[in-house]
Image 1: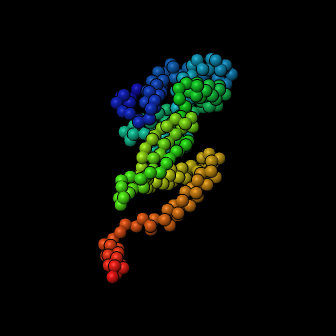
Image 2 (image 1 turned 30 degrees about the vertical axis):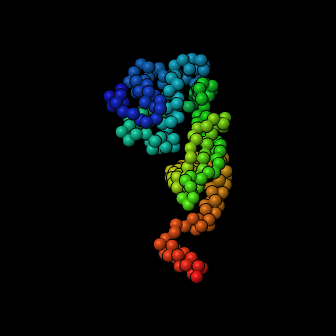
Image 3 (image 1 turned 30 degrees about the horizontal axis):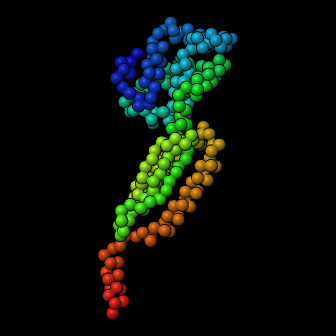
Length: 245
């Protein structure tokens, strides 16, 4: 096993241990040969297959090959990229035919079902509902428009409850739009290769169009909130004095 693997962190939960197991398998020639023989045996029973093939091998074979591998490299710590690329080479060299055995898909389905049954689903950490109410900060004439927001999951559990004034909210809006642009740019090469699930594309486009409409409304309203300049104050003073006369 490469010594660096014990010291470095990929930054992705669980991946470090999976990589250690993969390197250990590949360094054990007897175990490696047995696994490769089982994979090549198309007539082996699912029971015998699952006894020999480690679950981690199936999971890594999904994440370390194809378009997913390119995405993964952008997510891990730079110091670990070399080891992850080495793991990718080992998967392709020794286990490139893993999914040619029908038992692999059956085993993958079982792994997915076990993960879904145990603990919280990843969906439980995804924002599905946003509750809000408007409020004012400070006192006149220094009122500050603000909003209290509650981000909830599909079960109604509050993931984040926070208060944002209009400056905070505009900053968040800017950051989210920047992230979304980068997300689309990153996925563009894969979309052109028809490797992206496009079943949500119309829904996403509709959300974007509605957002653009809201941004246009903001642009139209914002002149009312224009900060008073020294010239504006002088004009008001002149107007006030004229009215008094």
